[in-house]
Length: 136
Image (tube, rainbow, N blue to C red):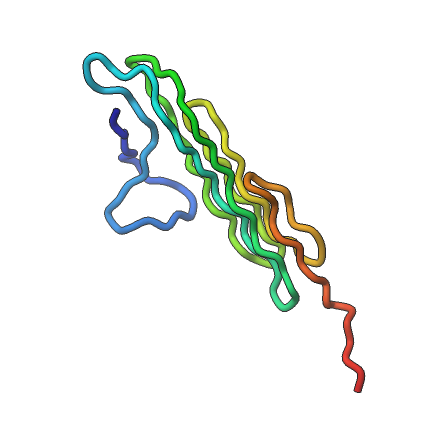
């Protein structure tokens, strides 16, 4: 089995080593091609939340493992879910998809309340300290 790499510009904000390109799918090679493949599909983790108050951390991206049947001469697109950025409200992680199977991204962290549900559990809850005052 080989990986096909994109030769075109990838849009969006991605971090990758200089000179590397992202894979865009899997195709079978050889004679005879394999009929099954083991997979591990990992989604992006959720972003943490909160600036000056106690924001919660993002949850881990989901992961799925198993085996899938392959058809010779067929290309199988792959989508890799990115991690959610940490900011004032947090963002869920992106889903990853391969072989028609979707792994759910992690939940964002909570800000002043519960975090969002996600692939391997949700994000942590945050504490709302905005109404707390200090006695003098």
